[in-house]
Amino acid sequence: MKKRLMCLSALFVLQPLSASADTLIHAGKLFTATSDSLQSNMTIVIDGNKIVDVKKGFEKGGADDTVINLKDKTVIPGLMDMHVHLSSQQGPGSYLEPFTLSEADYAFKAANYARKTLEAGFTTVRNLGDSYNETIALRKAIEKGIAVGPRIYSAGKSIATTGGHADPSNGMSPALRPDVGPEDGVVNGIAEARDAIRQRYQDGADVIKITATGGVLSVAKSGQNPQFMNDELKAIVDTANDYGFTVAVHAHGKEGMERAIKAGVTSIEHGTYMDEETMALMKKHGTWYVPTILAGEFVAEKAKIDGYFPELVRPKAASIGPLIQKTFGRAYKAGVNIAFGTDSGVSAHGDNAQEFALMVEAGMPAAEALKSATIAPAKMLGINDQSGSIEKGKLADIIAVEGNPLENIQVMEKVVFVMKDGAIFKQ
Image 1 (cartoon, rainbow, N blue to C red):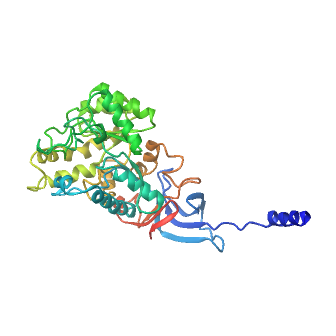
Image 2: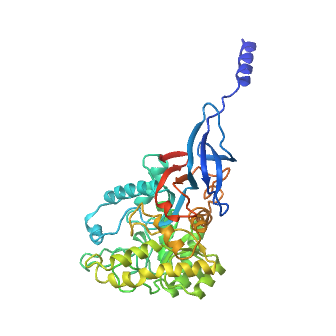
Image 3: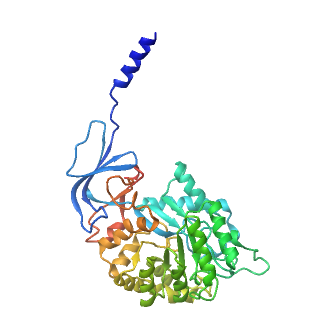
């Protein structure tokens, strides 16, 4: 009996294993994000959720392989938007939503907008602020396959000071105003600043978002005054570093921006009033710039409509909005590190790719604009070893468009194929 078992075991070991089937993408044009040019007639070989090879020519593949014909398309790495708000979308009724919507309402809105974002070709996003940690829950649901959307890096609730840009009690009657603190994203002083970071760690956030200056859409007078002291910013960054967080900073005004840069934050969002001195400081500290030109254009246009914004907001939208594209153009020429971001949720979700044309119009070459939405954000997030380009060993996040984006960047606004993690979501 013992001899028979040994023979059966030997037969099992010697039995050849069947090779797993691959997915082959035949790309007529390929932008890998590792160079500024397109390659022609390429094959991307995918096994599961990983790219295992990128070959010249159209490989035939085996009998069990799946071949995806994109020979008449331009294939690009999945796009990354580093500034979105998935659970909201700006409109004349937006300022009433905190009084009329529940946590569940925000969660369903987020799920809807996440799907639109993925179908627009954005396979990874940073969600920089929500109301009830709904995008943390959505991230988990997407990871488990029970919801559809991009890979989400969520900040949970943004952190502000009392009356600051992300204070959820702004604009409320004193009779209705809630008592908000670090858990709600409102801090004053070093201890509360540290508390807020630890709270977000407990909540399951991926990144930290703070509002270092006034903002456009908050019901508060100033759109650019500094709103954190230096010791508070240091406490935030030091604590975030302890917990492995990067720190994204909403900032329009120069002083608030420069305090945050010196404290060691990861990125400046919007950056409207940065000047040459600020840009030099960003280059010195390696700080990233996420411009959100589309949001600026959107609010400037809507400020012309009577009743669209509260009267306290309207002049800020009219004055700050149009400046962001000019700031972006100067920052690009100065050599500041730039990562693509739209602030979608101000403008409509799914329209994210309209940012590309605004970047090119301001002086950034199309290839650099594409890199700003692929390999550059991956570097900023520290995931460029697994995402951001079409290379062997990277995740199979791949999209395709009609036409040549290096000749006409607006083709990016009509994505016809989306693959995320090796699974097809649009074809």
